[in-house]
Amino acid sequence: MIRISEFQLKDVVNVSDGRKLGNIGDIDINLDTGKIESIIISQTGKLLGFFSKEDEIIIPWNQIIKIGTDVILVRHSGIEHEQQQLGMPKD
Image (cartoon, rainbow, N blue to C red; front, side):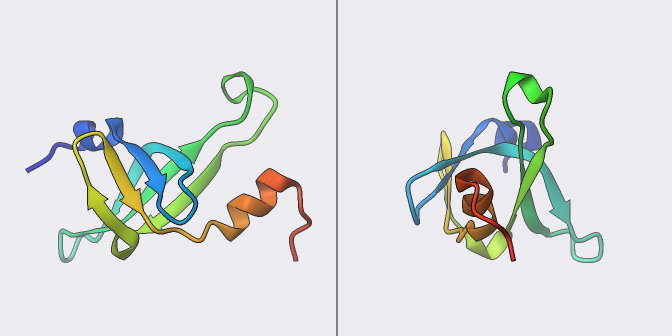
């Protein structure tokens, strides 16, 4: 059993490119089944969120590969995140 507070302290790392995505800011729980549907990683820009908007990465539970003692490994395409970070225009 793991507590949500412990879950939030773990770094989330994308195994597709080795990049640290951040830490869990929230989780989405299906109230009918009691199961976690997805984890939500909140990212803030420079200066502790000032002068920038907060971005979220939503990772479905089935994309989580392994939950370790210090890290959560996920397989996430991150196309929209990469476009924003590289400054590429969105379609």
